[in-house]
Length: 109
Length: 242
Ligand code: SF4
Ligand code: SF4
Ligand code: FES
Image (cartoon, rainbow over all chains, first blue to last red):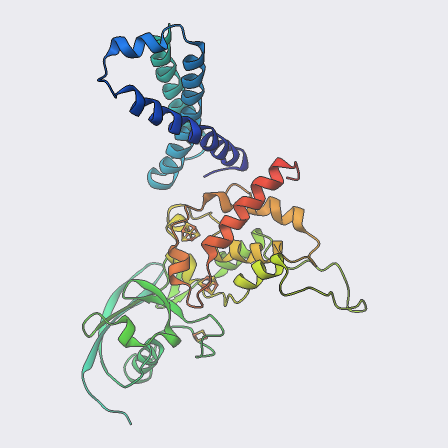
């Protein structure tokens, strides 16, 4: 079940993700050209404010978008309702946001 | 005329809210026979207590829809040739609606949702004022015209998986109706309707899987109507109207 606010959040996060996914794929294709190792990636990302912001924004959008998507499945398929539905939504959002942020931190810091 | 060839094997669900079972009948096959003809033959010749609905028999009234070999169809205009599996026909009451008896469903919830979606016209003029001039070619009228021929048969509602999963969901027919009214410039309750279609069980819950559009017997496309509702809803939210 999706109220109007979550509907907007889902659409806005999708709009944010679309160009980021594209950028991510293009950089990936470009970066693997001459082979790929962790040192090469880290050389690009370490201390980069740009890539840090880029991927943190990505992580935030994914956390919002995926949490809402899973919420709908939880409600429609597994009949999770009321309080529990809110708990599931927030939990999934938090887990994705925290693990994503941790990953961004690991390659940028 | 009545050229008796093969017999059809027809299984009909019979029962009520407490439960029921399939009963099997042998029905003579006739040329140009419809599913409604088959049901009527059974009721007249074998099972006088069989309950089902019909009125117009020509695809106007929308009362005869039922599940025919697992698909929601209007019985009066479905030729058995188009629906048969071998010579087998399986008839059940419409999906997603509570059964009253045999093939007759309780449609109250279905129609109640039309009201919840503000699927009614709120006039802005009375009979003494001149008739509004609306060009059939104007984009909003054209959008409304595409969805206006609904016969309220609930075939789309029976086909919709989101209704099956979330019984509160307003469903394709009510939302399609709301979309035609949202495009009616003579209507005076657009803000109210906009809010209604965005309620928790509103248009945003549609997964655009097009079950409704595939089974609408008059070839309407509720999926497209609902996509229109989503677009206008987002615009209304952006402009702070809802
Ligand atoms: S397109 Fe939407 S309304 Fe139509 S059947 Fe699918 S979920 Fe239901
Ligand atoms: S939209 Fe089509 S399937 Fe749905 S109630 Fe109207 S006529 Fe029937
Ligand atoms: S009996 Fe009226 S639509 Fe079938």
